[in-house]
Length: 115
Image 1 (tube, rainbow, N blue to C red):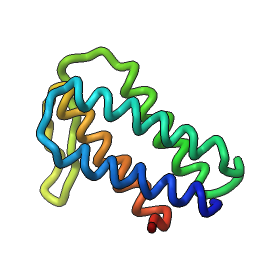
Image 2: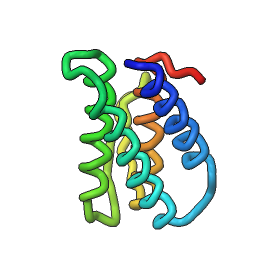
Image 3: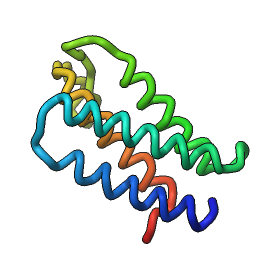
């Protein structure tokens, strides 16, 4: 990953962090999702296809694209922890926030992101 892509990724990660903590409307999160997808797509288009960074960011881009095209109002999911499996339900807003949290954790946990 080149220096310009790394700086771009740093800026996108900072936007993701801010978007997750702000309390806002579903339409705000929809717009944030689209903008983050667009910026990550720009970054991934400059990466080498066989690089580790490409695989990570491309997976996030594909997941965000899928979420952008979903139309459900209610989402059901399971969380598995040390106490077993727990069923949960969330709305569209909660689903988007959860996906953005996953994307942020996945990127910063696997790619060195710095200023």
